[in-house]
Image (tube, rainbow, N blue to C red; front, side):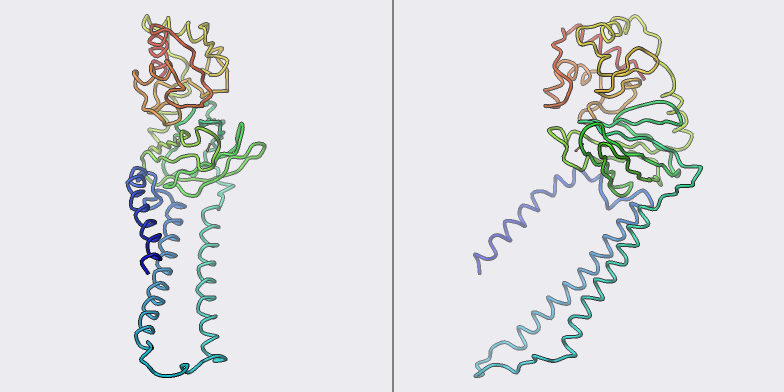
Length: 337
Ligand code: CUA
């Protein structure tokens, strides 16, 4: 008896131990949806959980009741057998079959509703999402700019995400905004999202894609149409005029030992690299390294000093920059608001 329960007890303790981790990701919870498809998925979950709970309770109560009611009381011989009782056999085949058919029906309905594509909606905003090892590229073809790692959306407007990949399979999953969808090289997948409320919704790449799979965080900023329009206007703006504080950093960026321009792009300049994230307005982002660290001048300097220490395995080498170069480059990059 004790031996049989021991593995169960261990499993239970492991689940308990994992709970604080789940708590950390509370912001990315499927239980707090902020979109029509997220709400549909959460409803499906609770409904199926409810049905399962009813089945569990009925079965366990019956099990205990029968065990007590028909326990061995010292009578001799086998109890009365019910083999061939058609009514009971029909019942215990029929009830599960009908229950599963109902669950299947509701699930198929939810799948259809979360995949429904408002294809002809002229109001839809199209954004291309390209997965890279290990960051996200966002292209706004209608607005003609490119950004990285922080996706901005207007609240209440259907958004058509066209998902592709530059290298391996990634997976876009922001639980509060609905279902997940793979990004597959050589193929475009379509995902429609609509945020109901302003806020920052987080997620993570949900398909193992290499060393920094876990360092490929998603950050979606849903904002009012006015705020979104302001953000778009900012993204469309060019590089700010260099000042005395940023002039040297700018020169290093374009001509320094690292030659940042072979990997990174800055709109309106000769920097057109696409190996690493577009840095046109990197100073205005809340995080760096695809959500791994917050964007502060200190963290920017730490990143430039040794990117491998912060995100081991990522594609940016340690350029062994001097302290002065790190400081000036960071000042230039942070000025790109
Ligand atoms: Cu990208 Cu996992």
